[in-house]
Length: 481
Image (tube, rainbow, N blue to C red; front, side, top):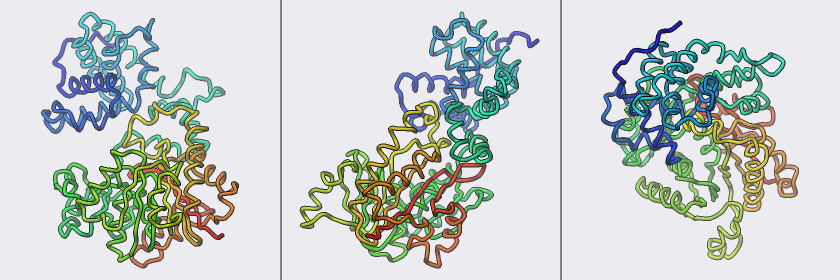
């Protein structure tokens, strides 16, 4: 039996992490934004800042499982003070997912609770001692019968994910790829960047930030540098001067697929990461193009315009605020200016999605999702965006549909529903690797990478795994009539 935890000095990293978690629960802000803005984190030494960051992101990513474990030992879990709960979550995260030595988990956890409620120290000691004893039993889901889905429950607990979501992954990806995704889930994602070709010193500055070792299956192609050491990249100043933009390698694949001569419409431009990549790639490759970057948020559209102007890449791009589900309304002014409904050589639909391919970067995703989001709400929106976009593709042009999801409901199912509709009957599904840019010799290595991640229908899908980049989906549809 583990003895009661003696009083010990609380580490500053854990104290700062608790303050931030309480702040996040009260404000609803995103964890990475709060960490970036925190003066307290900046005041910590590098080691403690790293631990505080890991604790905050980890607790946010796994809190459902942490609460499940904690509540096992509470008579009235619904009445637990939120501040005490967050303190216990930190300790439970260390125990389950960081492998912190149990005596440290208990002693530091008790002191963390004591900073919020001295009277709860004994309660915290009892809960954490029992959690330490039951760690293996909980992670292996020994409390669940095999016939009731023990294997899926164990995998969900080991990854800190909702059980229903792991079951969805297994349906969409199969057992092996699901396990790889889950095992990679709490590790930092590799970093890639796209370099601005108009900044003479950017490529050298970014290259100096290469991380040791290579990310799995990382192809070389013009403008992309990966993998990178994130702290060094930020410290270099190249991002502040828009000499480069951080963009996952697989997101750059999507942007490259949409880089074609002529006119392009980007639906769902956001803050403009793919706007930057397509413009930079076209400039570097000598591709003449014009573009319309459409975004429903005025703020994000304004941020996109400002960055592109600072980067010197805004020439030929129109920045429009509007709803992709009402393209006639959103593009009315441009249509009037052109004297007809504008049509494009390429329309990129960067659709709102579950983000299940990017959970390592966005820890809030798994526990904010609901099954109805996956099964109904998002696919309905995605199909409407795709249907609207199809009307703007000229004959012979391509319609690129992209998500950062790994779930079939948002990906292949949406594409199939579109192809079965009246709007989709004029389109042919073609391999993503057949996009014009991938036929160029300098992109041969990237083209091979795309082919290696295509299925028999030419749909591009990647899945996060150890040392691999994010999960992205892309379909390429060509108007044939």
